[in-house]
Amino acid sequence: SISFCNLRNSGSSFYRILDSHHVTLRTLSLKSCGLTAEDIYEIAESLNSNRFLRTLILDDNPVRNEGAKELATSLRRNR
Image (tube, rainbow, N blue to C red; front, side, top):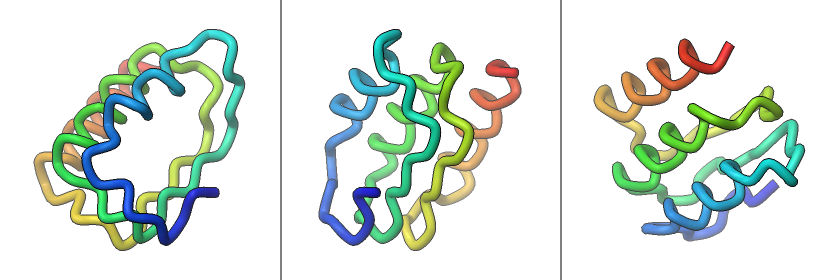
């Protein structure tokens, strides 16, 4: 859990973590981390190849419609 941290503009770091085939992270809580639209986009991109993550908590972040669409598209691809 990395909740309640200011992680603004950390998207590329999430991408490297979630895209790694050596990381088998099952749950990632990023509640109230001040994530930007770019962070959400990077997380969505990394979900295209991550087969381990089952729970992603993004409560209280400004995901907005565009971010939600990106996440939904990635999740559909990653079944």
